[in-house]
Image (tube, rainbow, N blue to C red; front, top):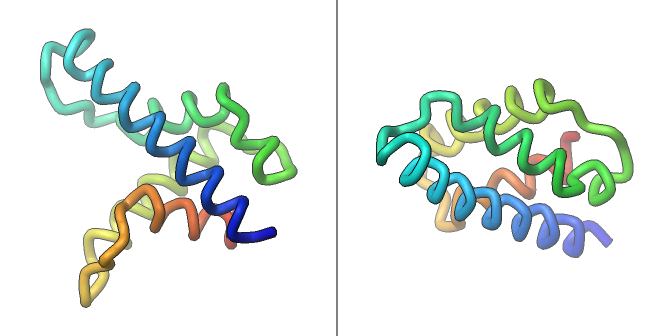
Length: 96
């Protein structure tokens, strides 16, 4: 079911966000990670996003998709009421 897939991808992106926050705090000493999309993509691929989507997904493909999802999220008018993770999860489930 599509809703289950969206929820699973959302949960994975939320976990990636938490892990990435810890990475920025410890490894980057609190400095913003300009390459965040690649980091998220690697995490998601390593943690089974391909299984959730039913197809192989490359890190590069997912990183580009995440970056474009962030840009679209930031420029939506009106601003989405949902979180970025849920917004991205809906797009991933529908478009990847």
